Image 1 (cartoon, rainbow, N blue to C red):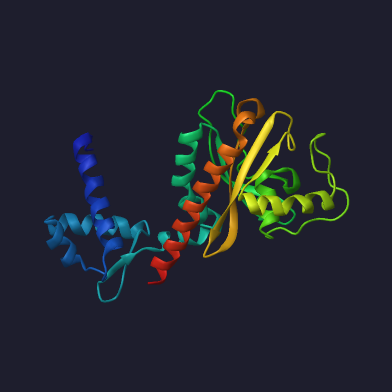
Image 2 (spheres, one colour; image 1 turned 180 degrees about the vertical axis):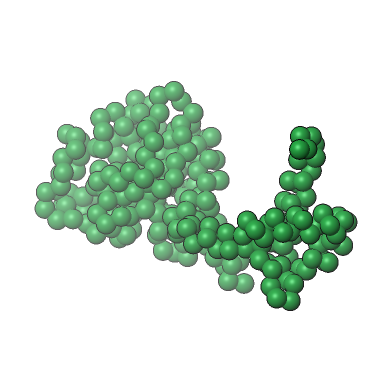
Length: 254
């Protein structure tokens, strides 16, 4: 048994290189193409390609052409639209988190609630909880209010759940607050979802259509004195993310 770690690492590097060449190729390469391009011995190339094929990482056609294997298709099928959106948003979320130090969330509409699909944790010891996958009442969430204002969520009528004393308690009161959110370009909630918790969020759009909300949350005691300034920062990052998403779609269609 070969226990040389250098040899093992070298084998992994060679396999990774061959796989990357197959995935990145404009035209499916053949065994000969890969052996010639890498300079590997044909026996080594054949052995590595066979292992990749057994693992469904590559597929070999009848004409010898090599393509990415069915494992890639399985991964792609499992990725949801939320996964893709979260991946595109992560850089912006990290930048906003580094700038503010607060917990950063990305939320989408789910029926009558807002679900948070991605989070960058606060750099402070005292920060917000992990909200990923959690559905919260939209009427007392800054993310939710943004989605109401953008008409992504339907504004409810009648009485609303009174989560805290600061929570908006009727659909009429919620509806009356939405024009101001549209004018500002962001929403603020102070102690509405939880006492001591402040949220600030702004809309994220793709090609002019709002699809999500980018938000920040943290202790009210830390955010209370600069709500508007922080709101402007969140809105600027949401606009930058929106532009990036729209540009990505255009590049993909080109």
